[in-house]
Image 1 (tube, one colour):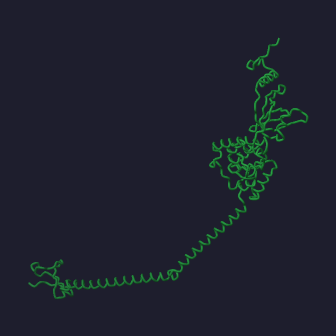
Image 2: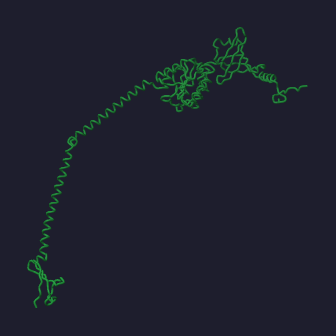
Length: 409
């Protein structure tokens, strides 16, 4: 006899497991206990067969890639009017159901209500204030665009007019512009994940210097993905400068506020990401003309100054300066010669005077007056007669010579 199955999930074990059918029934019983609730989402698929009383709707969370199947009576759909289409945001009052055979959860809708524009605007305003309070819109956090990017990353719709506007107008301004293009969904539930993935891919590319997120105009709900919080935060965290070119000038999704540069249109984005080659050439020509003019004026001033210097007498007749210096040197030489001659004359007179004095005091002058000098044979001068020996030979010096004598006893 087989053992009974455990009543609770906590009582199961490897030896006493629940069959899949039992688990499905248990989940169905648990879900059936839930009360009907209101849930919000975006319609991504609507299947309505002619004559069938029930329609099938796929309701997706616009923030994440998650969806649920919804069954709704056709009368409930008809009550909403013709405005209910794929991509519309709705709130659904439904009872959760679990299909045991498929093992899937679905919603049995009782009521559907479209989310009004006013309510969406209020939510966007609340999100806008939240992001502003975090500083994501602050001007000081915005990165400047490069003067001439090496490669331009472009995120746009497939075969869209926005892509054509950006590429053609950019290359019209700068023919050598290079693009790295990512074509993604720009409307509907796939917009946020695809744009976010393309942004991350381009931001990681080292050769991409600027990223343009571009989309043409559209209705308010068409542009809602570009106000998605996850996308806005991804743009704020990007390393590469981001240009927002969404819709027309009057369209202002939250992406415009967090992007580093807001372009009013895709065409305006082209004007912001590259310079105009013609304008740059004109500016370069103007700078060259201004530089040539400034150089010409400087040369004119220097030439005039040089002519003024050359017109001075010292440069008109350079020998004048040499002649003046030669005259000065000649005068100094004459003065030196005169002074030296005068001093020589005085010295000559002084020498003559000294010569006369010397001659007057000279012993020769005394001898010429008749005096004589008597010396012993040893050369000593005889100054005392007592020193003379009888018959001693003495030497007598007179003015004209000398001779020997012997004293007379």
